[in-house]
Amino acid sequence: MFVALLAIAGWYLLQSHHPVCNTNFPARRGDYPSYVFVFAAIAAFALGSLTSSVGIRRDGRSQKELGDGPWTNRTAVVAVNLGVAGFLFLVTILMLVEAWTLGHGVWPITYYVRCANDAGAFITLVGVASYAFVIGRWMWVFKE
Amino acid sequence: MYPNLQVWLVALVGLGLMLGLVVADLFFIRTYLQPIGRWVEAWARRFPVLAFLLAAVLGLLIGHFYWSTPPPCPIGPQGQVLQAGTDRDCVPPRATPPTDT
Image (cartoon, rainbow over all chains, first blue to last red; front, side, top):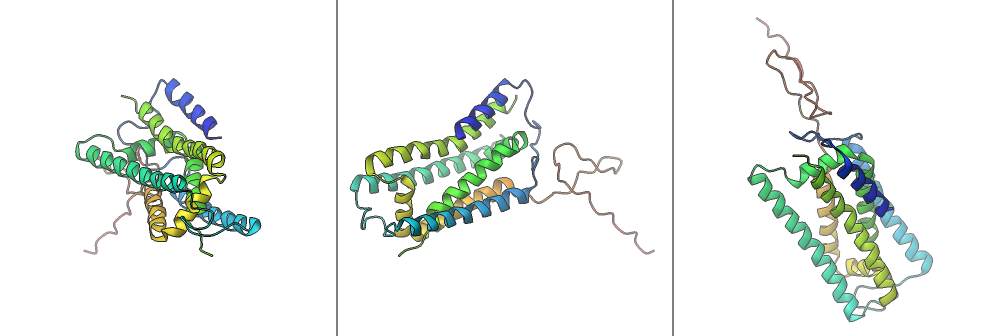
C-alpha cells in the first residue's frame, strides 16, 4: 500500500507542470480540517494499543521486558536499541534543519508538509494515521 | 521554483520510514523469529518513560504539522476582507461595535 501511495504521489508531483501549492505561503489546511487529522491520529493510536493487547491476550504472548524471557537475543536487543536511537537521531537532524531554515528565510520542513497536505490530503491522512497506529501498537503496552 | 520536489522528499521520508519498518519486520521474522513490533513492545516495557516520550514527540509533531487554529483573514487597503488564497480556514475579523459617543 505504501509503495502504491509513494508511486502515485511521485507520479503526480514530478509530472506536474505547476506548483502543487501556493508558492508564497502554503495553506494551513488541505481538503480536510485540522480536527480530522487530530482525531484520526488519536483514534489510530488507541486502535493500535487495542489491537496489540487483544493479540497478546489471544496468543498468550510473553509480556516480559527486553532482555528477559524470549527477548534475550543479544544482537536483536542491540538492533532494537540502535533503531530507536536512529529514529531519534533522524528527528533531531530534521529539527535542526527546521531551525536553520527558519533562521535563514527559507521554507521550513513544516511548509513542505503543509504543501503536501494541500496537494494530497488523503495520502497525508493515511500517513498520519499509520504512524499513530504503529506508535500506539508498540509504545502503549503494559507489563505482565 | 516549484516546491514539488521537496514535497516528494517529504513523502519519501514519511512513507519511506514505514516501508523501512516493513523491511525490518521481514528481517526480524526471518532472523529472530518474531516481528520487530514485538521486540519494540518489549523495549517499551523495559523503558516506559522513553516510550512515553517517543509517543509524545510524535504527537507533538502531528499537532505541529496539522493542527492549526484559524488565523484572522488579512484586510485589504480598502478595509475589505481578503481570503488571499493562502489561508483557506481563515476567519473574518469581528466587526468592532460602534463606540457610544
